[in-house]
Image (cartoon, rainbow, N blue to C red; front, side, top):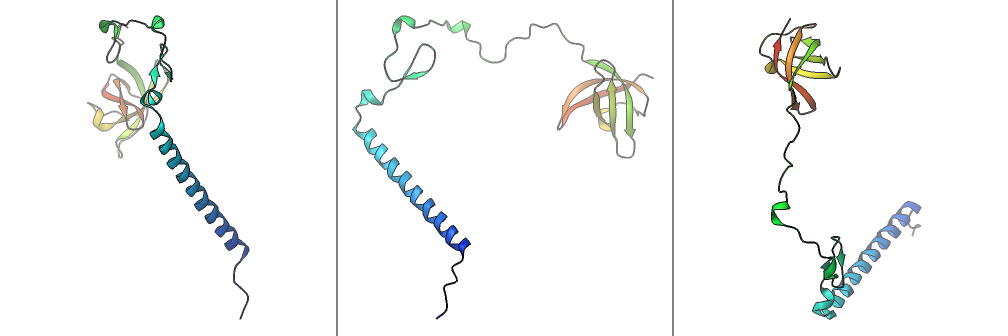
Length: 152
C-alpha cells in the first residue's frame, strides 16, 4: 500500500474545520446554560428599569430625579422651518451640453458648482455658453437642474 495523500494544506483545513465545529458546540452549550439560568431567576431579577437619563439599570431609579414632560412639549415630526424663504431660482452658464445624448452641465453663478442638466428638464433648447435660470432638484447621483429656461 502507498503512503497517505494527506498534504499539509489538507491537514490545516481539517484542523480549522474541527476547531470551528468545537467552538460552535461550546457556544451552543453556553446558550443552553444561560437559558437555564434565566429560568432560575425570579421575576424581579429579570426586570430592567429606565433611569432618569434614559439608560437601563437593574435597580429601581430614584423617583426624586424624575423629570415631568408635558405632552404638548413633545415634537412629533420635523421641526417647523423658521428660516425666511430661500430663493430657489438660480442662474448659471451652460459649460457643456451634448445634444445627441441630451445632457450637459451648468455652472452655478453663486456657488460655482457644476450641476447636471438633462434635456427633459429644460423648457427650451439650450446650448453651450447660454445663460439660463433653473431650480435645483435631486437626481439619482446628486444635484440636478430642473425647470431650465434660457435667458440669453
